[in-house]
Length: 367
Image (cartoon, rainbow, N blue to C red):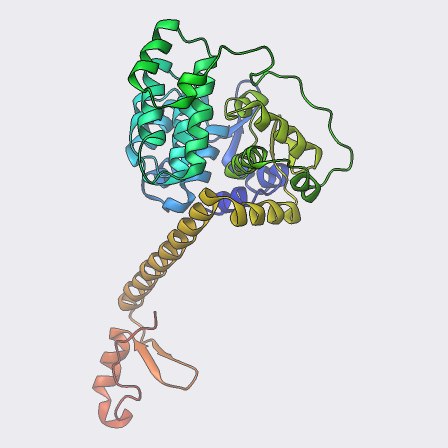
């Protein structure tokens, strides 16, 4: 758990690996991977550990599991269920079955990850699903509608057969993106040339450079993805997450502003605490899915902490109940709030000498 907490806070990887060196060994290529013992602990955590840390746990598994361990990791993620967007992403990166992308997930951030991943699947199946799940259904957040349109555009640009296009246009006559779509022109795809990095650009200047709502949507979407991952991803992995060329441009500009930094063979959110605070504050104030995610995670963490305290208190009571020595606990005002059975027995035998207990119920225990 401590490893996951530090990873989630974007501790520098060199320092993190050094602090938890006992969890790692080198594989045949010299890269660090989890030891069998550490991997088994991770599997156990994925099975019944705190739900709010599942995102960090599956990312750690993806990053540091060996080739032989990855199949086991994928199966364990599926057994527990897809609790976070990272769970769904990791499952697919580990060649999990595509059918999991065609299920309804309640949270907006899970829906967003569905869209991102569906754009890499069969257009004949993915486009109808995206239309019916996100474009024509009522009460879908506008951020998801926008992302779904971009996902459909990516699928159409991937080389769809003319017969499929005609079939989709007949089947969904009211969907503008189908009726207005034209074959891709050179440069419209993700592989467009990189822009020149601005020297000395900071995050606030980057926000101020946004020209319209489409660009603002792209920026918030890209920042959201950067904040979602606490492990470095390769350029290829990042490219698979972008929905438009503008997403890539803003990713490059985030690198220019040093919000995204090169790290251990990939790219990740800066370990600088001030920059992390700035981008997370921006997301919380401007991005619906980020607010939903933060609020849900905060509630989940509070619930898990309460449950952890209850379990700890119960274990403490059981342990104190088993010792033969008498133990009496008093609070700051000298009121007895707990005594174990041995102490009760001792005082019961000498009750006439001790007198009545101050504080009444001898078996009460502070929560």
